[in-house]
Length: 69
Image (cartoon, rainbow, N blue to C red; front, top):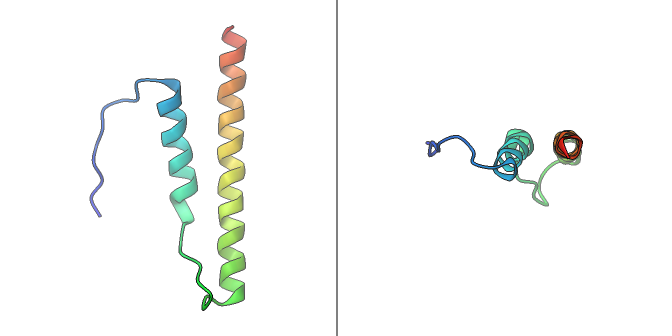
């Protein structure tokens, strides 16, 4: 799958969106009613971990931005 290459992010928001997308999409597999329970639990755990990392990234950026005042 080819991805479109964009120039450097213009704003802090663009940077955060790209970083969060990268973290969240790393392990995104579909979960269906036919997905074995252990596989679904593993996928949900991976998604939760990715979301936790994304929230931490956002919190660090907000903290840096706030310190700049």
